[in-house]
Length: 223
Image (cartoon, rainbow, N blue to C red; front, top):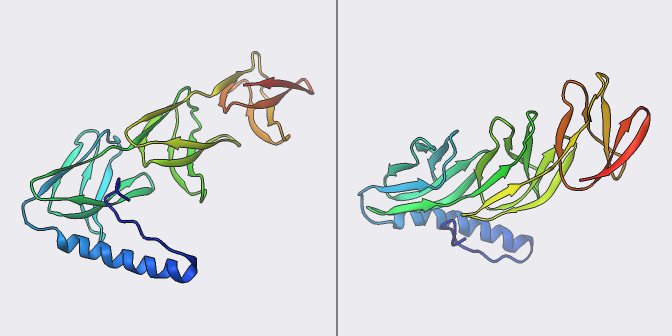
């Protein structure tokens, strides 16, 4: 709560949660009204994504500006704002008159990322928050726990800490002289997670044990 400019509300049971949510909503509106002064302040993201971050008023939802790697700061009136990061948002960001508020997100990098892409999922809800690929292999993210997809496989519970860069270094499977019809790749549970062929003969995978079908025979390997 402190890191995002918010407040902590304790809740026990359904009734307590309902009450806490109500208090949080009122607290959010009061926080906007409580900021004195009219002089604008600066809101900055280090580092910002080239695709941009929408900055919107936390109460009305109205967009007031955008931050990106090309313009990493925006000047806004005093208030409380939500800042987008992919399909998620850094909520309750407070900007005070003539002051600078700096957000330092986590940065996720995937070495040897696939052209087909890697979905970044919230570990708890499974919601897709962003996607990386060989075309865009790194991005700033909200601190938290994520699952990163590699075809049908997942790199589970990747922890991203604010202000730090986390580099995933997946193993690489390369099948020399792969056939056009392809070779199924299965995880330790026997589930097919990928396929390599003469069109795409290599792919990144999370650490683990796998098999690849070669000439009708399942060949085991570990990354």
